[in-house]
Image 1: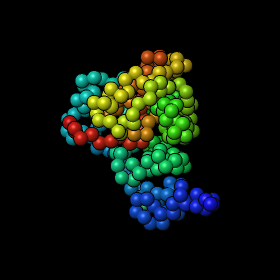
Image 2: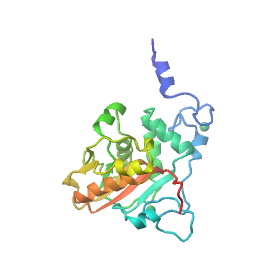
Image 3: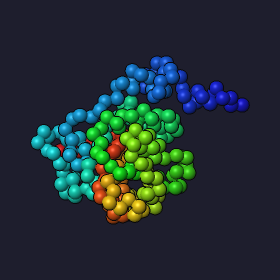
Image 4: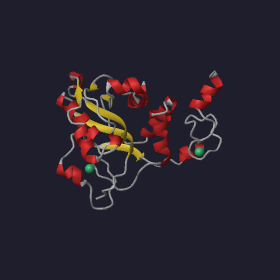
Length: 235
Ligand SMILES: [Zn+2]
Ligand SMILES: [Zn+2]
């Protein structure tokens, strides 16, 4: 028989998953305070549009953005998708530790987020929503909405085609994977929007979602993400 205590241990293990030390009742539990403090904000060189880390001091726009200018204004993100930040996003997304959404969205408040009329989370297809039971970006969007006092706009953007998770396909497939996948309601006409995602990988999802929102009449779309995966092809 599974008792409540066992269930608690299952969802909130008493050991920090990073350093194995006792994790206690931190707001970011099960991650301990020392590990949480280790989450670094990325402050290196980056493309002014898509935010991809760049090596060159003289490059302000990456090759991919020069080749095809994205529909979104810019991507703002907190850190690189690695270490404790990656683990925390995994615990929220796949283990379902929803309370990590609050401290994670707290990180976003440290970004220079522009004024906006609404917050739109990147949606999941209803099939995946059923499997996972909640959309982590919607939960993050709700916390951010409370912090910034900007309305959270759910059901504005819809994913109409189910695609493979971005992490399971290669780059070429990823770009194909998201083509015409999203559709947006015209309720966002003339609005400046913040599109919230957890992790930006190639930026293909951000491009597609922003295009759908702009086609529906949005004035501008700024992407806000917790993390960005570091590309191997640094410019
Ligand atoms: Zn720890
Ligand atoms: Zn770029």
